[in-house]
Length: 135
Ligand code: NI
Image 1 (spheres, protein in one colour):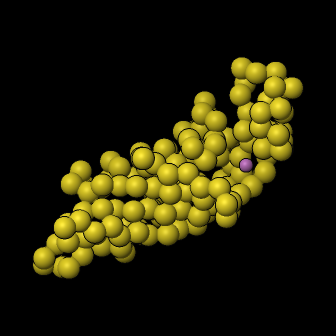
Image 2 (spheres, helix red, strand yellow):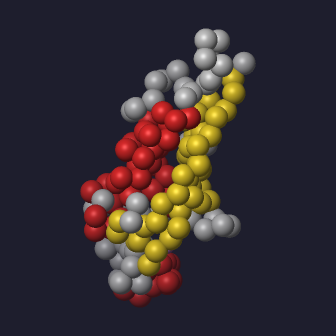
């Protein structure tokens, strides 16, 4: 019997969507306002889901305090109040779209969580736009 447990977190970050292989015109036409050369910010909401069996000793699937601490250490310390393009090595050559950010977050956490658990990450860039990985 598998149960999903979730921790919801929040961070603010700035980014610019830009493909250096393209002309300014093409970047502007594909990314619009998100191509603004001076960056812009988002209030990201992050949901980290861990799926697994209930431990009969604790009654927990995964200790949510431990999950919260892990997200803070590995993800929030890296991304919160940062300019993703400039401050975060993972995006030096990777466009910081919500899609790419959610994969980076997943990979930062995956190596820290035992393989017996499934991990699913949702990232809300706005109230109405969110991405999920893996699917
Ligand atoms: Ni944006």
